[in-house]
Structure formats: structure tokens, C-alpha cells
Length: 207
Image 1 (cartoon, rainbow, N blue to C red):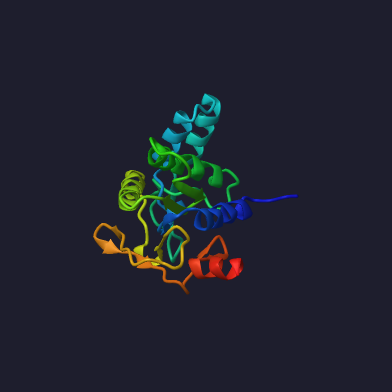
Image 2 (cartoon, rainbow, N blue to C red; image 1 turned 90 degrees about the horizontal axis):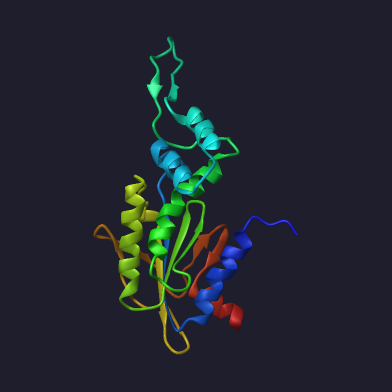
């Protein structure tokens, strides 16, 4: 049966909420993700992944020294384009994934189990200890910053559930650069890859 990974990601996320005794989740929305990645980051990611040199040269020719012009009453001088993957190009998704993979590798380093889910620019952080969530969040934000990527804190959210048998969402605050992220309550949900996810929904399904 054909699939694109959306079902699998939502299954893993719901399983994390359902099974763990202590869970902290953070959904991160990257601002203009595909339009913000520098071309040099993309090319370096290809090299780091061990991609064939001829292919790296091909992508380099596509991206390096790219320019655009605005057509009004007159055509403007060429404007340099030093970042963003090309819209409509079948390679763009792959190139972005290779670039973002550098963030995932650093976040996962030294951690056991699933610490992060990534579907293109949709990220979910998963933590099981009381101390780990903010550190995990800080590391992720710092690594995204190295790629000149930032999160839109107004579109991010967190969920904390705990207990031998979780009975509800907890009041825990997590921050990005000093700004508190939205906390999901029992009846709240976050739409992840088109599907609403939250503690109340999981509790309802169990009943």
C-alpha cells in the first residue's frame, strides 16, 4: 500500500503518549523553513553525506551564483539568492532533509530511544525525564540556529503528562529564548501532519 510516512509518524507519536509514564512533548514550527536554508549548508550537507562528487557538482551548478530580477516598468538588476531550496524542483525535499539531518544527528547524539520525530520541517521533541525537556529544546533551537533556521514560537506547543497511569496534562512551562511556549491542557490538541494530537483525544480513544 503506498504511503508517505504521515501515518507512521502519527502512530509513533500516539504510542509515545500512550505508553510512557512521564512524557514531555514539544511541537516546533520552523519559520519559512524551505526558504531559509543557505545554499552553502545544502552543499556541505551533500558532502557530509558522502554523495557522489559528480552529483554535488550538479547541485552546485544549480544553486551557486543564483540570481533573480523583478519585472516592473523596468527589469531590476540581478538580485543574489543565497538561500532557499528551489520551489517545484523534485530535489528540493531531499536536499532540505539532508540539511536538517545535521540537526537530528546532534540532538540524538548520546540519547537513547526516540528523542525527535522529523517530517520535513515538522519537528516533535520527545522526552521522558523531568530535567531533559528544556535541555532537549535548547539543543534543538541552537542547532537550527546554525542553519539560520528559527521557530515561530506562536505556532509551537508543548504537552506534559505524567503518572503511573497518566490522568491529565500537567502544568509545565518550556521556553524558547525566554519566550514561553503554549501549554496544551486536557481538552487541547495540536494538529500534527493534518491529525489532531492531545491527551484528551488519547483518553477518549481508550474509553
